[in-house]
Length: 245
Image (cartoon, rainbow, N blue to C red; front, top):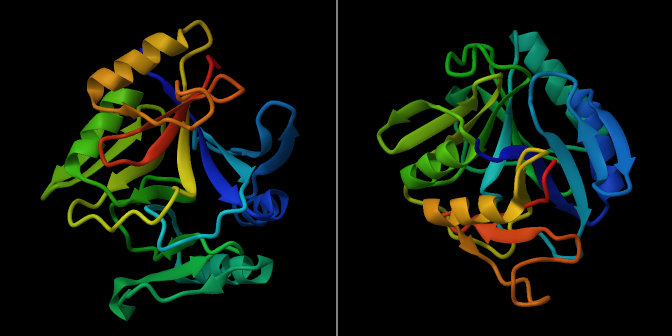
């Protein structure tokens, strides 16, 4: 059995403020857990939580992953945009074209996300979070398919997408050319073995699939004080392997 996608982590200068923004947009419950910190728990079949971690590093460049939020109608799209703007989002221009039918916004800490129009067939059977759209190669799509045990639901022209067998958002990779990596990834995966699993066995499995360890500078092993192992996928995107959950 592969590891589970436990959380999508956001680095934030104000973790609680950013969590409140996304709680308002998504309608998810906000919790402050002694072990996991400020987090949002999904109220649908998303399958992973959002964690908000304190960081003093400034955002540098466009994130390599962002949410695509779906709409049931043009009015629903307009209401989602209006709600996000009221909560502190802003319109941004990343080169999108008017005919593409989606609205590009940034959250209060500059993290990009899109509100997709109602005619998007690729996300038609998904929930409000239709996709976690990532910049990445075909190989990294294959890696995460094997790592998480999520089947490929798209594999064409070097673009890939995977989805949990239980539903929830698609995770997509747009293929080359990849955007340059600008500092630490502000959005990252936390993965974890199942409750009766073994962290080291999982780390070894991920290494065999093409991941690498990252030296955090703490003890040379890639582990921090909480026993979390820092790794990178084949495209160099950072993630952490937690203890069994």
